Image (tube, rainbow, N blue to C red; front, top):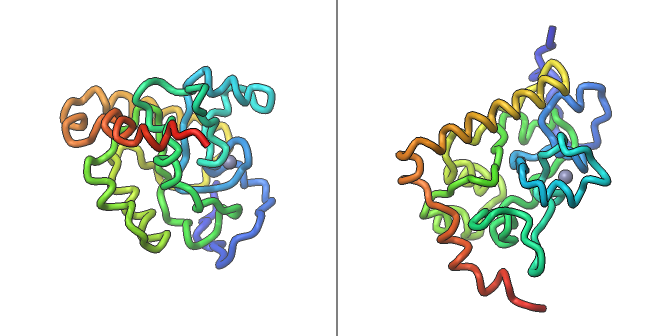
Length: 201
Ligand SMILES: [Zn+2]
């Protein structure tokens, strides 16, 4: 039986080494916790880290997510994961203790390669604002189906299977046309931002 994990919330972050560390959703590579988890299915992207991780370990923090470059595109056309400017919105939320109180009651946003975003997202999240305010606003610019409660699972296996289930749910939600009308296809963003993405240094 699970203990009531609320009872062991901590006020500051430090690298937690308890056995239950792997029963919470976290980055498969660096093992940090973050409200923003990138769920990767692109074989090209998973091949990049195949030497380090088996392909079943396919969800990451923004820092560990395999990145496209000016010469290699790892994700399908119009996928937001190709845009570093888009990815930068999710940086800075990594932490290392699942019981850290600041994020304990924060759901996880599971970002998939087909994710759509609210057309007004720039007005909502791109102006300077405190990290936690911005985080809450980021949750609001994506379809609610991408959220999953942050909780301790019975085991790592259960955590993985819950994420797979969430991925299937997200996929089937996108076949509903009303979501596709409210939320923007990623194409508009990447086209608009093309000059900075392909700027050579
Ligand atoms: Zn990571």
